[in-house]
Length: 127
Image (cartoon, rainbow, N blue to C red):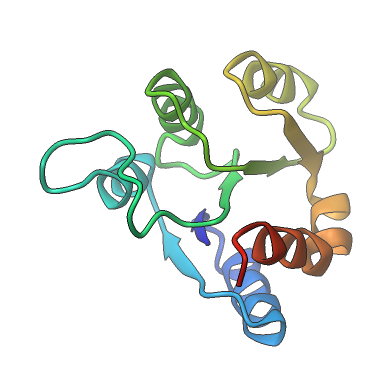
């Protein structure tokens, strides 16, 4: 699992939950870093080998989260994405959905359901 999150509190919470659920966690701080991690050396937008089972997006990350989400989806992303944000940011949530993110939730719901989200991704990856 890879997560675009620049908030140290949420990064630590995700890391601990990932550890407890047995999910490998790789944090990135910017959208550019996320896209670079997902590209292969040959320039493929989304290589099959070594793909994460899940991508988490903190839509409040200052490093271009929404732009990275748009670019990823326009490249034909097949990796499940869960995005989270402040519950009052309804316009940003709609922008994320319009960019192709089916699962957008408030931080509170994300935090409450994080273990289940990670377990679901783990099961989907066949781990």
